Every structure is written in structure tokens, then in C-alpha cells.
Length: 126
Image (cartoon, rainbow, N blue to C red; front, side):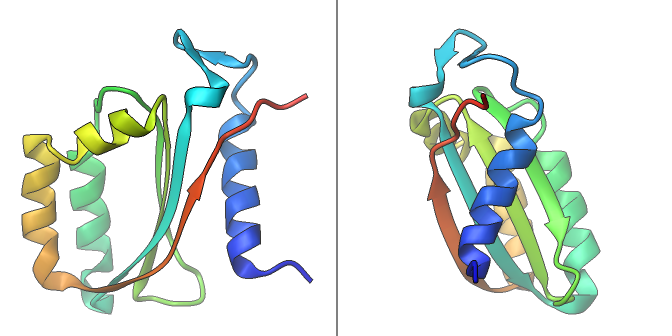
């Protein structure tokens, strides 16, 4: 039986790559790409607020290919974030953006913890 961590990694990669037609994305080789899937735990009554905050703060990030925010259907205090970046450096640089720093500061009081975190290497589809 596939573990949840494995399933989350495979499912997210499949979703992202469904729209990828070539091993080159905006001039970057697939082997340079970086993926991240993480579970954020928040106060249940704040989940929609945190999702809106993250959605607004993560637009137009240099090097970002996909940033998906999802509600966990089994846990009303969990948010899953799936990210695909041109490079790992692009992801690190995104954390320095004023909009992201502001969102982190506003969300921090409502974050109760973090669950599964998986780094991935997106691959080209056949």
C-alpha cells in the first residue's frame, strides 16, 4: 500500500507535469527544477483567511512555475502547499520577498504547526 507521503509526492508531481509539454521550462532544464510539498496546520476557524493571505502574497514570484494551495478534506486545520520552482535558489529567494515576509508575519499567530514536508524533483512526462 502506498504511504500518504508517497501519494502526495506522486500526485502533486503528476498535477504539475500534466501541463508540461517539454523538458525545458522557460529556459531552465528540468533537472534544475525544485519542488516542495508541505502541510501547514492552522486554527480551523482561520484556514480560509490563511489561504487567502497566502494566495495574495505568492503572486508573481520570480522562478515560480506552480504554487498550489489546497484544503485537506479530512482535517479542517490543515492546508497543503505544493510548489514547483525553476531552481531551489528561486524558492529560497521567494522567502525574502516583502509580500511573502508580510504574509508570514500575519499568518504566524494562526499557525499551530507543520506536518509532512517533502522536497521533490519534478520530472518530464513521457
